[in-house]
Length: 145
Image 1: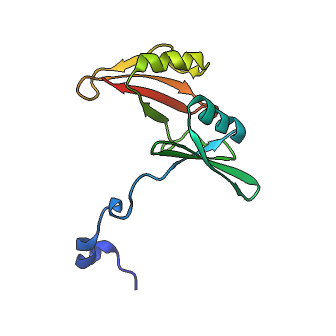
Image 2: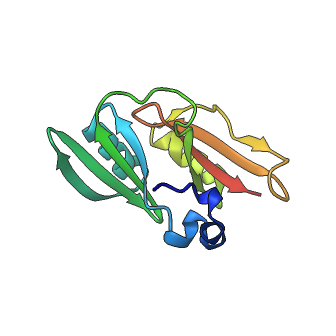
């Protein structure tokens, strides 16, 4: 016998948000056009650690880690640009000018040709710029002012 949770008062009272069963965000996933290029970009240009490299059938899968962010990336077809797809990764920076200058020295491909700002975010606004990764993903560097 199947009971829909909304029909059972005891189940409604005991329902908890999923955060009650989790401890943190584990990882975010991204399909790579070229896994080796993606690993090199994230480790050499952005300073990620290659936390794991595994096989899944004939494909390889890498876990790239920086702080609390882990990106799972694997070989496969390009992800469609649809609602629900990840729009960008954002990294917090205390010095947006220094980050921008360093990104130029690294030869990163810029989406923004100069530092952008949104004054209505947070108490005093944000300053940020975006670059492209090897899979056309947008990577944001953001300073909360």
